Every structure is written in structure tokens, then in C-alpha cells.
Image (cartoon, rainbow, N blue to C red; front, side, top):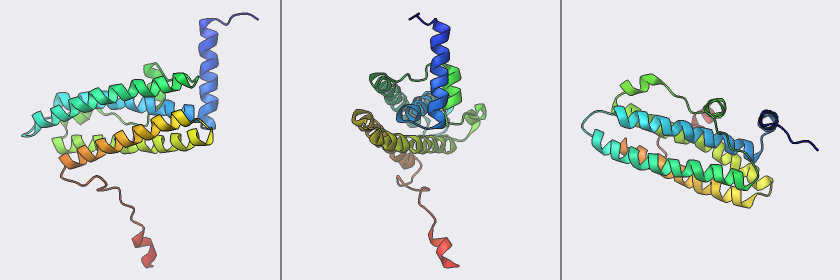
Length: 185
């Protein structure tokens, strides 16, 4: 058996990643989560650097804590993928291709409350991938991956509560289903 070249190994990895994303696996979904957290890191820094107003210093302190914790989760999720024999995304192109977090250079001009709302929205977006990855990990009999993802879901939910509180909201404000209107026809 001949040894594959570096380029051949990477090409095989990309081919497998493409296949995994068309029929989602826990590993592929968790790769999206790694990418989401890479983008969340960039956005948190953007907000910390540009937030203004009477509560700016308080917001910066909370953002700094979230940045530190998010970086730890970024590594923990990537490590879990590696422990499971999976390859986490590791390039800016891969992060860009796999994230569902939207970035916008104009965010630096938002008022402080609008900036904080983007954090709530980003963690809610990430939760869609985390909950899906948990189900896939459970279905694939990957209990340790599911356990780490459940812990991440709890941390994400805690971040939502913290940032919602900064906005004067309860944790679930704005997330309630509006099914009652459909029943009144």
C-alpha cells in the first residue's frame, strides 16, 4: 500500500466532509458548531472593540468573559471530534463554508443594545446545530460526544440568559412560539 501525499489526504478529507454534510452525521454537524464558534469569537471581539454608551464598560467585561469561555468551548468541541476519530474544520475557508453565523462589518456602528441582541441571535442559531448534533450523536451511539454537546447546549443557553438580562429580558423572550394565532380561524 502506498502512502498518500498530503494533498491526497486533504482531498480525501474534503470528499468525506462533503458526503457527511449531505447525509448529516454527528461529526459533520459538530463541525458546523466548531465553525459557528469561530465566527462567534470574531463577532464578540468586534462588539467588545466598538461598543459605546453608558454601559459600555460593563458590556466589555461580560463580552471578555464570554470570549474566554467560548474559546475554551471551541477547543473542547474540536477535541471531542478528534477523540471520536473525526477531523474538525481548521481553516478560515472551512469555517466560512460551514458556519451559519452571519457577520457584518457594519455591526460596529450598531447601538449597544442591538449589538447585544446579535449575541443572543448567534447563540440561538448555534443551538439549532447543537440540538441536531445531540440527536445524531445519540442515534449513532456516541454517548461521550452527546454528553459534551449537552453541556455546550447548557452553556449556550446560559449565554442567552446573560445577554437577554443585559437587554432587560427574560431568557426566552422573543423565542416563544406564536401558534395560538393559527388556531383562531
